[in-house]
Image (cartoon, rainbow, N blue to C red; front, side):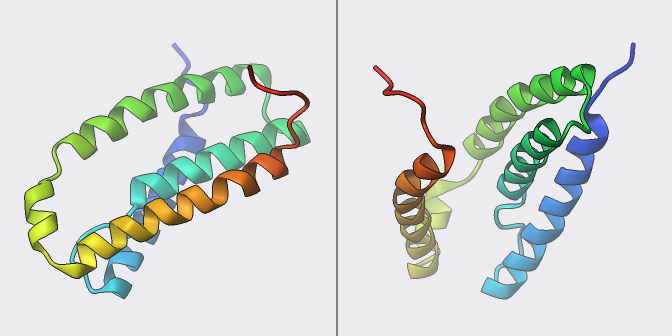
Length: 123
């Protein structure tokens, strides 16, 4: 059985992990910070770009849609094993990073909505 979209997923994952390790080193944490999130973002951006520019055929699009759907439960499972108590006892950096991440996400919602150019109201 051929599995389509795995090469793009793997490339996004590798780049995301490298960026997460670099970001962890920048902020002084000996861990990967946001690597899987970066990988998800790259997968979304590159798959949409490929669809828009026609370099992804139908089978590859279906394969990427499958792996994208599988990726979300994997991220949820990975985040469920994180030690929240240890992170909170880690001090102001952990708490501040979480708050900044949430604030940035809330600020970007209207920006992304305008970029998407909605064609109608969601009811």
